[in-house]
Amino acid sequence: MSLRRPVPTFYVLAALVSSSAITAWWLKDRAIETDETTAAQVSSVPKDPCAMRINRVSGFGHIRPIVFARTACEAQRLAPLKGRLQALISEERATGALTRASIFLNDLTDGSWISVNGTEHFEPGSLMKVATMLAVLMKAELEPGFATKRFTFNSSIHFPHQQYPPSSDLLIGQEYTLGELLRYSIALSSNKAEAVLLQEVGGPAYQSMLSMMGLPSVDPGEVHYPIAAPDYARFFEALYGASLLGTANSELGLEMLGHSEFTIGLRAGVPKGIDVASKFGETAFDGSRQLHEAALVFADHRPYLVVVMTQGRTAEELAGFLREVSAMAYQQLTAPEYSVLAIAY
Image (cartoon, helix red, strand yellow):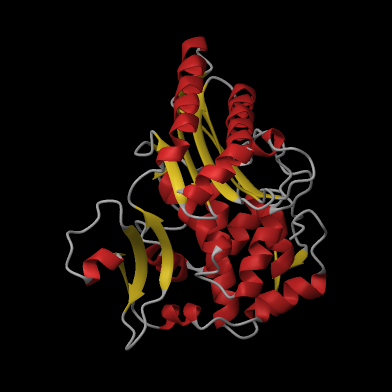
């Protein structure tokens, strides 16, 4: 996959109008449930405390589609990396640049993961534009004609200041396609495009998407939605696994995320030429800054997901912390000795 290449208009349209059987969940009430199933359970052996936890949607007659799956325990072979990340957080806190931070990392080749301060919650800011994209693309798969509609931006709302504003933005009175709105919202992080998309997708559809992810419901217009890094990771895992959308729209979502203008955080810690799908979020909170980023890094033979949430003194210092975390993660997960350990695990 080459995420940095331009997304052709015909590809966007084809993806938007594609259908997915899974998204038919929207048409009926469904419930999220968690399985902890292992081969040991089949033979009545006591349950493995590190069993795979699988979130499924119930309510069908014969199927229970998987939304996402994750082992219950952290990977021991990633413990050295976790130790270095914890030391980095301590160092940055000692300088005053960082107040707190949370990190979640998932090796997507086998589901191995680690979490640092994973129970801490942050204000996600523009990270939730990915949630909106998921809800919009689900609606596009379900409602004929929605994907080909044109939308006019007429809002006079005063949008909050952005530390990292989009290089270009919507113009009042201008018409836009759904694909254009998604590009502005995801790649450029436009609050104006996000407002139009939220208005069009509607509250019930947004709530349904969060419910399927096993996350608390919220009014799309609500300013606050505290979330932890491991929980936010579900949005990216759903795109990578094509579990909520059809394959074409899942690919489209990652292509959009592959064109993010924010390149001074997690992307900067990865060598040039490596495809990255990412989204950042920022907000001011209690007199300090919060800056977060999630990135799906398509390293050769070992794609992985990293989510970093931070609070501290300045956005610039927090961006520097994101870079350091990203560089550490890339170095560890692409090291030859790690690959050998992974095979032997």
